[in-house]
Amino acid sequence: MAPLTAWLPARPNQDFDLIIKIVGPAAFGLMKDWTPIAQSLIQQGFSVMAQRGRLNGELGDVVLGIRVATRPFYSMGQGCDVLVHLGGNVPEFCRFNLQPGSVLLWEPPQEQQLYPILPEGIIAYPIPLSDLCLQHGEGLPGKGFAALGVLLQLLGVPDESLRHYAPLLSAPHSFAGGVAFASHDIDKRDAYSLPLSAMEERSAMMLTPEQAILLGYAVSSCECGTACDAELIVSPVQWTAKHLGIAGSMTSVLESDRHPGVQAYRGSQGKVLALLRGNDSAIASCLNGLKAPRIFVAADIPDAFNLVIAGHDLIRSGLSDGVGILIEETIACRMQSLDVRALVDTIRRIGFVAWGAAQGVVRDAVALCRSFGLRVAALYPKRIVPFSNEDMESFAKTVGHVVLVESGHTQGYWDRLRTGFSFKPLVVTPQPGQSLTPMDIFLREGLGAV
Image (cartoon, rainbow, N blue to C red; front, side, top):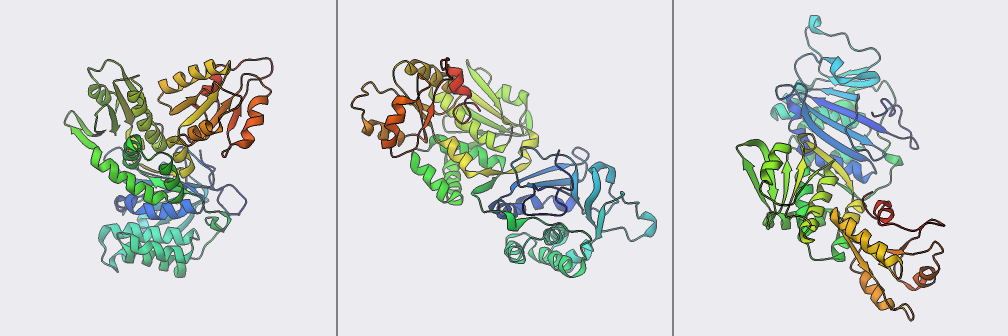
């Protein structure tokens, strides 16, 4: 659960976690246009997630949930710090877990007898959303964008950023009208804002589930090696556009009358299927008839990307004749920020180097990692004096990380050699009095499954 009201007031050195819920028919069109705004927040150092759903199943009001925090998180959390209500009806406040200090942005009913009793302790701001929308003739979607303009101005997003957002949105005039209204007509009754000045720019990007799936297919067929990693670090946007183009030429999208709403993504060989909005029944029917199928369930959007790549590695290694990746409805309705360094670590292989007694343990560890679709390679030098630095340097260029595995805990041999390498390897040694096992390597953070 997110720490409700931890954002009141914002201070540069405090943890910040904000949950926003935008409710009403006009919220439906905000999801796509939220992307450039989210990307701007990500560049300021925030972790961001957005998720669309409905209050009462398929028939209830549309809800766009947004979570922004200074630390990484993996779910939408609970509660509500800011409720933006766009509907013409009176909201059922009990549904949103509003707490003292939560903020309500809404258009109150004009008839006094319909005016509800607001939850105790919330900070309510009446906004003439319908008027702001009608002034610019941008229809029902304009109401949502007017509210978004009010929200971002209220949260202290710099004016320069707000001016930059407007032309990128579907209802730019309504958005600008909301910003202007909040700037001139709202008197903040508490000190709260996004702590933008405290953040340092970091390299991350916003992905939808479909983009993560397609990028997974593209990376699995990409042959540009470590040059691909370098391009991703230098220009994530250019790298993403390039690889989405690659995926578009090699990936087909299938739909079935038996499973309405489910989209199945299939690459050129057809052995790795990713099912968006799928369930266990849909994926079982897709993999029916295979001798050694493997089915994985994505935990979030980055995990969907990782699993598509792992599925292709399992096919290439002959460990499966068909892999299915299940992306459930909840995740299919999300957008999620992803750290570029995490993407690079997924793309790059881990290269183990071992000699002597450690060689057998590494061989078993490599087999174990590959059985789970992890991207690993190994080098087993036989001649250690004189050692061939050229062979080591050539091997290092084919992988992202080099891990030197010692059979004893003293690190003596590799310690003498690694100063001459052009890269920084990681050295793994057993605990004193113990021996390394394949599972030790597999479970070591950053090397195998963890």
